[in-house]
Image (tube, rainbow, N blue to C red):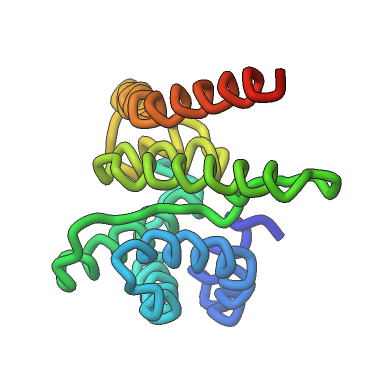
Amino acid sequence: MTDSQIIREIKDGNVELYSELMNRYQRRIMAFIYHMLKSAKLESLSEDLCSETFYKAYRSLHTFREIDATFSTWLYTIARNTVLSELRKQKAAYVSIEEVNMEPIVSDDATPEQQLLINERMDKVRAAINNLPEKQRSAIILREYEQMDYQEIANILGQTVSSVKSLLFRARASIKQQLEAYIEQDRSSDDYERMYRK
């Protein structure tokens, strides 16, 4: 059954089917929430906020309209708003959205030095993403790591598609600027190594 079919069934009174929707999205929503809470060191709240997200979605399911958004987009919006509300309560300074699939892929035959360098680069990218304003961070994660299209991101963030494109442009420019010093330093050490080997 598709999400739409399940939702229609639930609205017609077959509420037991809601567990099927939970099974489909719980891991992704949990990971999204976990990583939004990570830099605020509130990961322990992930399960509670995930449950709260699904509870809110269930309570509001009668208001869900497919012409406005897909179910997954609607659910991500609820999850994001739930986390932001909790962070405001906790007076956390900023939200970090650091995705599971941002882990570097290191080949088995990479040397320990190469593995260390790849991990260091990924840490720099994560730090650059964490330094972005919240909407830019959300946009870049949803686009690059959740592989969402512009319209889905616009729906989740409550923005227009052109605003999302602008957010992504500014986010990428900021990340590039933050990483320039590191990349320059990396080039200098490579040049030094080549000179040293001669």
